[in-house]
Amino acid sequence: MSSHEQKTHEEPVADAADTLNAGAADTEIDHAAVAAARIAELEHELEESRKTEREAMLRAKAEIENNRRRMELDIEKAHKFALERFSNELLPVIDNLERALEAVNPEDEAQKSMLEGLELTLKSFLDAVKKFGIDVVAETKVPFNPDVHQAISMVEAEGHEPNQIVNVLQKGYTLSGRLLRPAMVIVSK
Figure 1: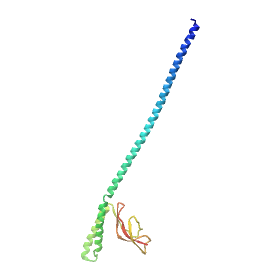
Figure 2 (figure 1 turned 45 degrees about the vertical axis):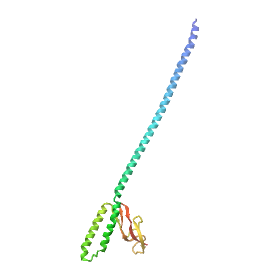
Figure 3 (figure 1 turned 90 degrees about the vertical axis):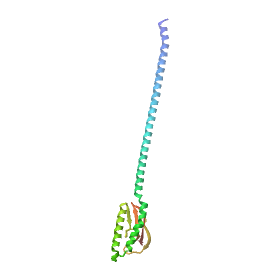
Figure 4 (figure 1 turned 120 degrees about the vertical axis):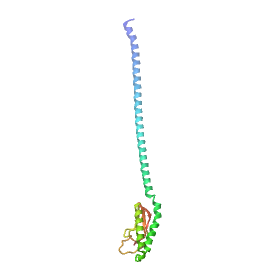
């Protein structure tokens, strides 16, 4: 065999080896590209998962905080108005003490000590209920407020502006700003 024939014989073998090497390189590049794409996809999914997890955690924290605030308000309301029923039962006692004061003749010497005792008892009683948030609604010459007053009648009254309280027939009471009983009043026209 001549050297020329040998060269031509080796060239197809070399070309085949180059083709195999190039194919292997292309396959490696394809595998690397596929792997890189898969890694990028997984990283994106991981980031989305983290975002979703973070949002869920923030929502859960916000819900817990809202529930805590709601419970605090409920407890505060329960404390504030736990005395409401009891307070409503005390109002007739106050009314009766006031009626007793009106019935006593202040000119009668025999009744003066009783009058004094009733006044002290009523004052002490009103001071005690005030400590628990019960306030009296009994002002005159103030504008009529349907939230705390109940108009019994309207009269012409000199020295009073229209829609102003002229007289209080029965005192009203509030418990920590919440109406227990409206004041029954006469209003100016």
